[in-house]
Length: 240
Image (cartoon, rainbow, N blue to C red; front, side):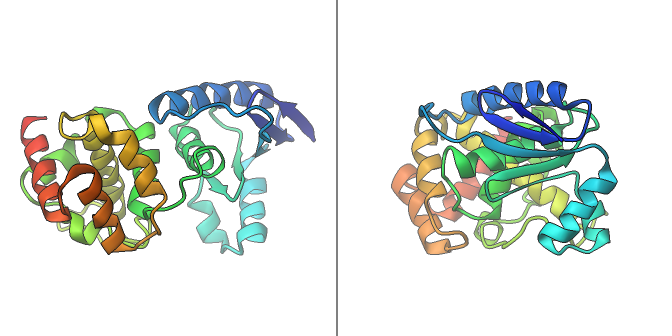
């Protein structure tokens, strides 16, 4: 077992690629901090990462740690839980690492654990994906073929919203992209960007799945309810 200390991480690994992986994690950290700004606080504990040498070791860990089935474990490439991130060494630049690093940082540095699955997966999927990867969901929103935001924020888990869309696309995949598009809209559009950081912190401190309080945050920060926000999002996609 090798222990690698970086500026922000404690990487524990039995992989020969640990140093390269740790370096990429610091690059990811910088991208996340630039996107969702937060101050450096001296003396904070390093964030632990369990980097396994191969997927089989990682799957075994997940089965033991989370009591997942072997099938559930094999669907995962990495998981941020509590204060740690666990994965295996394959490709340090795999987008899954910056996605899960975002979850870890929101928990450990920003301390924004609320909102709901749409919020938590939205910020991580936004970091992970490029704008053109959201083009399809933007077209759906433009044509009103997306999940209305009033329903969307009620979803307990985007991952478990597994019913297939009529087009044959995975509902979970579409919901992840819709969550990322919503973050794009709030962070980059004329409508949302000036108040985005205020909204980010207010929503991240709102109890998960509490729809009245979620809507109240949008009302307080942006002056719109969820139905009005939906119309603003559709208008943004018309011009995107």
